[in-house]
Image (cartoon, rainbow over all chains, first blue to last red; front, top):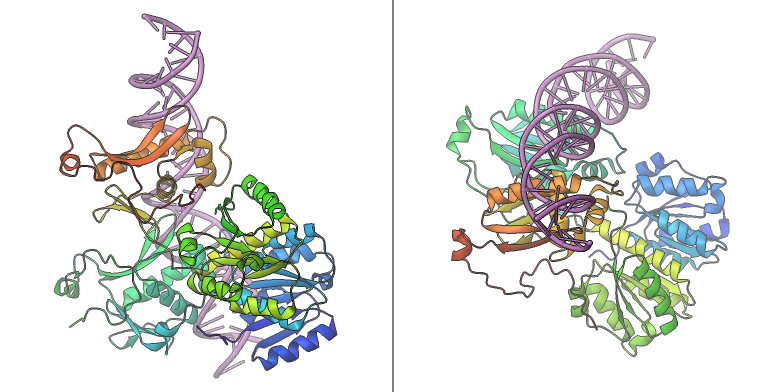
Length: 266
Length: 266
DNA sequence: CCGGGCTGTGAAAATCCTGTGAACGCAGGG
DNA sequence: CCCTGCGTTCACAGGATTTTCACAGCCCGG
């Protein structure tokens, strides 16, 4: 547990008193803050890589509900806290149902606001520990987080950033079938629009680059109607290495952790 | 996918007025409820497989804070909502920092309490990505959500996505008779048109694939005029395996994973 | 014992899904 | 300003999957 996980928070409010006090305390706590006085486009929020968003819908004007809905829909992993003046039960219920995580009433003690931001952010602390530390090996492939790159016997696959992140995500979930929506959500950082084919296109690019450097191995498997699964296996037929290394595991039952240095290729 | 994911909530409170009204609404919404008038040991809460816990620390007595801490510590995936009378900012902050997800003040409109329970459950559910994907076992069958697939002794049934979801739904409701309309609603995500036979057709496909991999067992039973029921049982007569493996359990709930109704009456 | 639903079945028809190649827009570097 | 690398979007083709249909068999009340 990191009790003092640094939090990235954006505040959208014009109540300068509240904002100043909050800013002071938040910065004292080591949080990273962004302040805005009016609606910030969801795309920008994506780019900020926030943990949470604290806003007063009073400053949103007309389309406040629409804005909340868009933000909550596009960034399901973002904690959203509404902090506003008087409101009716119906309004609060509507907001919470839309995807808002907490709704507090001004005047509000900044300490409580911060505690609620923490409460909402507290979750998915699944340390990047293991992934940051060692390179992970799968088949002939070596994925090196420190290089943002993958290699086969020392030769780079020349992956772009996105390609690398996609490959890393799949490889870390080794053996699991990942849905497109989940993949998109975790690599792109926001919800996948219906009908978006980006994931497919990137999978194709990955397969091309993998094939070029490591022919004779299949890494990414398609699960129709669901998504993709990473599981390196020698492709039958012509591969020498495949014959030299008969599949050692008939059914890798334990869906345990990501195993870095698996079986030795030599 | 499932907007109407059924919520399992426990309430610990003695405020009978509040509890009765809340119960009524929650049950109308299809939630599964458990009411208690005093602290419930964390181990029991675990067994209840709850989404959320709503409690008034007033009824906890002396060790209220300790209890909250133990519960939040032992069940990190449980949403905890405190609903109590007047409280100080310091108390609320302390609670939230301890792991409480939301803190609301009585008197409190039940609709808002429910909305907050939903909000907390929603967020909790999203957080646990890879955590709770325990395979279900029934008869010779192993249903693996992480693979979107079912297996019999390691061999895949080659289910399509719809087939898998249907099977999973039935298996999770083990023993219960599910109406076609309900099945359709939960697997397809919208209401079944009158006269639609899709469910029947998929049941047939499932039975075929089950029969191919696990002959000698009957899994899906038809209830005339109602729907279907999942209940694995060795079919009498010619099956060797069935005879070689006499049913070890006469009727009780044997398997660990699929405990659906651990909600004890009373 | 009969008849009107209700369910099982097989196959055709309609849809949906994925792989793929290429065009497009954008941003940074030369 | 042009060129290049990268990510996104489109359109199409080939399959896989789902839905629809017509018919046969089964269940239950009368």
